Length: 420
Ligand SMILES: *Cc1c(COP(=O)(O)O)cnc(C)c1O
Image (cartoon, rainbow, N blue to C red; front, top):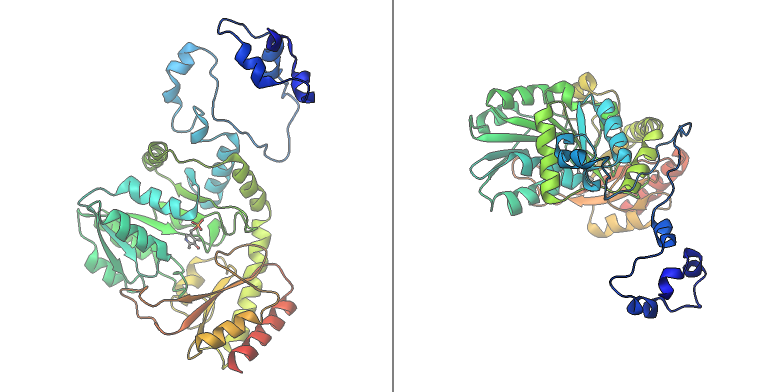
């Protein structure tokens, strides 16, 4: 039995032996020599005294139990304990707990993207016959999910104007509306809504409330303090912070909601990788500083751009006269780095010329990273209730960490190319 005598080192050196031939020569009754066992069973390394300042990456599918009874009773460890890698390792739990602290939550679940955080909330709560109300200025894929997945499953969907609370009051159906989905500031058009008031209206009708809080992170606004039941965030943006991971989170105070969300994730077989959690944990270390810097530069540039005749409108909740500016001042701790320019009357050719003149800003979707981005958006057909300029380009800016002088130069060149 040649293979039983080969040591790990033989394989590591390689070349001399044909492993496949050796395996076919093996008989089923052969017992591997204990050196093979040594290859797969690492010695127990003592962890005492190893108190790393950073969070280690714990990878695992299998979790080992100390005895038969512990394995038999493993589901009593749910929803927080470790039973199988899919439901999380200590790396994921650390990220969840850190997010809970920032959001003022009891628990947080992680999902593979921001969009899947939204779909996880909706699939947990909504059943055939239920009614869903979605803010008209939501992140657009929410409408796609509602219409292409939820409606065929028998859920009815309506949109409402979050800036007119009476619109929600008129559309919410007592005993039928199960969830009201909010986002503030609104995607692209940046309206700030009165989350306390909208949550109260929803709760009075027996509906639960979810809010996409990606723009603010928990640092600028905490939806759970304002009546929201499910605070959702795309960690892809400011928490990840470096344009290299995709992840989402949902934070809750109610343990029953938490257990229900965890059961949805396990039913769907959805989990997140500890390596990505580690990158999110690293991003979190500098998030407050990055957000403060980007927010301040965004506010300065928004004020400067508001003076420019080439721009139709600057949509930033921190500008006086912006929709919901007074609510923003009341509820938010500051600005993040994302706002929008409405380029009224500019042809697509001129918009493209403007984008092609950029040297510091990159052209691309997503946001919240170290690099400043511009992304042209069209709202044609994208809004069902709130009026928008369908023929106008909405240019979304995400301010990163470059020097403000370089960003200003880029914007000057862009405006020149746009109007030449
Ligand atoms: C990016 C984004 C999402 C989706 O996040 P992904 O991780 O890209 O799926 C959801 N909501 C808002 C407001 C976002 O900006």
